[in-house]
Image 1 (tube, rainbow, N blue to C red):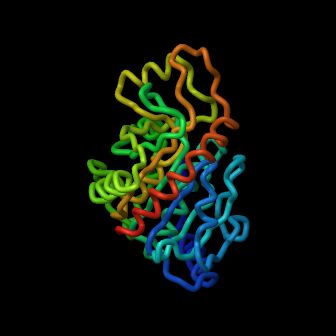
Image 2: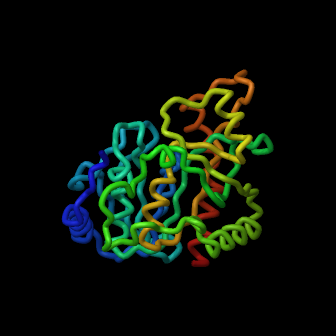
Length: 278
């Protein structure tokens, strides 16, 4: 049974963060595997390691530094999660999405969520950025959703709408910035699987058949909780490997981290451009 995290605990974390920072963050950014260097670009940054935060889940995955960084980027006050946790680490969906609840209580209304993903669409290349236009939530379809249990009415309705999970205005801004900066940006549907094993060739062919362009082990629970309270969401996938539909090439986490490092410059330019226009 998914354990609901009480509002009192969420507010305790929120107040702890407020007492550590000297600005009011407006935009939240979640950085996926190998993408943490964006946080090093912040001005007047305050860093809060996850292990100092009460009740905060700790990431165990290589490539996730595990700290909040609050500061200014392109004159926008931002809160960056330098690393996230995942379902496969043993956490439940409410723990995975606790940081989004805290962002909401801090007054953040827009969130940019990034991840490292495998390219199912065979026209994609390693190092591409994919703008997430929609998602398929296999873990949630199987019943493990962060909204399972009693509804927190302080945040949103019992049955939130997901017809526009990814904000259309932010999608348009991302397209505009990519064009202005000559960044090749793909678009597509992201599918969320539990992991941690990479997919079999048969699973990948199935995912391709139902219209998935990229696959990963994160992001969707956070998007659902953000949308539950009306936050605007932009999702960006770094394509760190191309799925082998015939099984002739094995997937590897080190490959994911290395490819993530190569995509960082374009991703940083894209996010900075978007922040300038919000």
